Image (cartoon, rainbow, N blue to C red; front, top):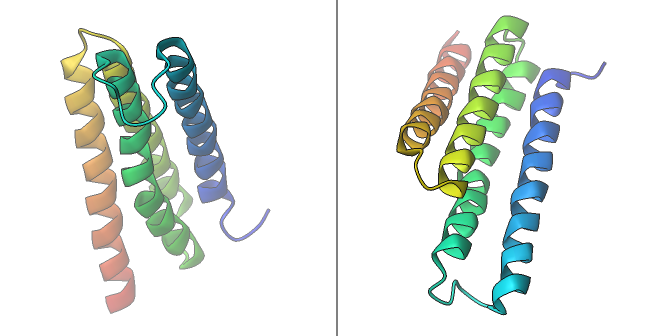
Length: 129
């Protein structure tokens, strides 16, 4: 295995999730004929936000994970961060793709922000030591 194999696993999972969310946006665009922005279509808007929110939050979390892994942080930390990130992103996407799951949107964001915060603090501790 390479130096960042745990992060590579979770980055690959997030990439597949990104592909699936992108495909849902493309499918809705084809259904509605909307080529730019959302055209006022709420389903398209929700799909766009599920896609966009993953693109906005996952890269920094994965970068922090890769740097932590490269810096020698233990596997338990990395598996916990990665699993929490992936679960958070899936919960958030699920909530935006359905009409009645506000709890999963909040939970997904809490998990994602917890991963970003914990990884950032752990990174600062690593640098300071």
